[in-house]
Length: 241
Length: 79
Image (cartoon, rainbow over all chains, first blue to last red; front, top):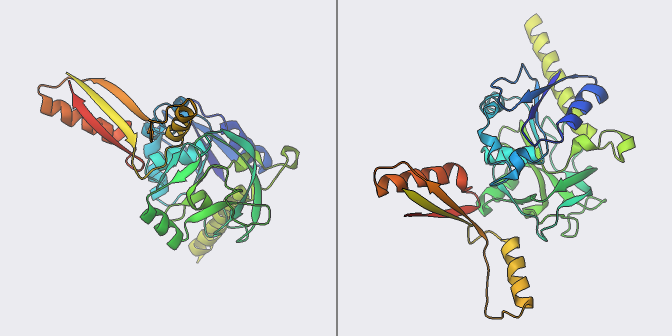
């Protein structure tokens, strides 16, 4: 499988995502500069974390107009799996591929720490191998991760099971103390109505090897490989028949 | 022609920066200051034949880029 990792000016987790795809999972990986108009026959697209365009104006506000985002939109609409991590999540929101926006963290602090997130849904390409209610220990590193959307949008997300990750304590309890940034409903990650575009503020790519303190993030990358392999197997069976 | 664009968080959106500034002012003894909302201010140089055209152009770029309609609203002044 081929992971295309989009690189914006100011992306700084692009190499982490590349390392996980290429060296931890042994898959193909390629960087795609934001000025390009093709995703180079990607099977999976990752919008990595960082500070695209210096976070000027608003996080992700300039990056969403990069030429590559037209291809990302087409890929997403055709059902391709897209993972937006941290700044990548912010870019997906600005681009309208995911609803809502990120406000400054309550308390105004930039949070750089390991947190616990609870897997809420397993019917996305990035959570297929996880168990509902499973708690993952994953780092966060953001100043603007306070998820906000209009009340009716949040209700719709909840009703359609599109809240994919929530900040929790280590036992999976959702508490205000476990919410690092003030996000509504402790939302750490969501998906689009088709469920193939997932955005989250925590950094799974920084938690894929035990030497980094946690390998809990690996399940998101393994999940998408599993889902794509199953689809490929089903497809070839169909073609044989 | 010039436009001034003022972007602010919608009233329904919590503004932690404005709140922190208000708290600081209160601790400095400014009891007369109530709520504070922080926003952004832009000055645009516009090639427009009329004030209406300038207003339309400024509004268009505010809609597309300067403000995020999910959390912000804006006001345009032509000068």
